[in-house]
Image 1: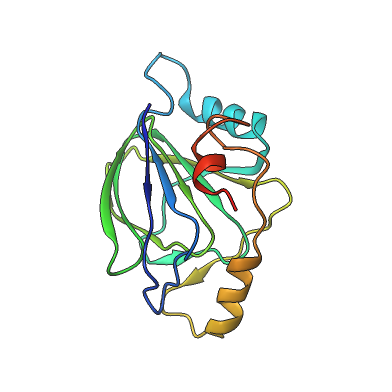
Image 2: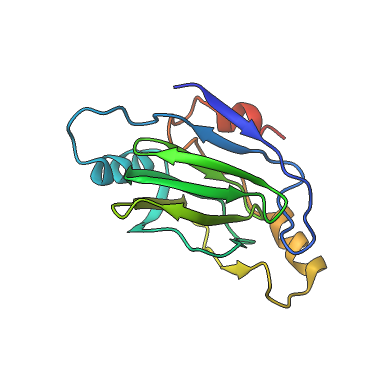
Length: 169
């Protein structure tokens, strides 16, 4: 697994995060015949990420101003637009994971019928959901994004890993 980091400029309606890059983990969970949904949940929880859920991905640009989010692709494939309308489309497959800092936009462009995503947030953070077309106080949103705390560990690798290296203050 070789993670990659992606920083997105402020897109106006989607603020993105000026300091923290999105981290993409290709094949965070290798194909081994296990239930990837449960495996992602166990992995996230073991590294201090909770509030896990299973679902798909929203088909509209949105972001969270009060929490970071990790998404693990348990089954299927998805093309997701990261960073808002002017961002980057990325193809994700089962086993991939993406760590989305507070403020970074994401939207499902298309997916296979069997797409199942497992999501989680750092323990103690409560997520909100802001659509790109919502009318919001942009200054207040950006202040909330800057105030979101650092997770105790990387959701994939724990106390050692790219989050701690790439998100160092």
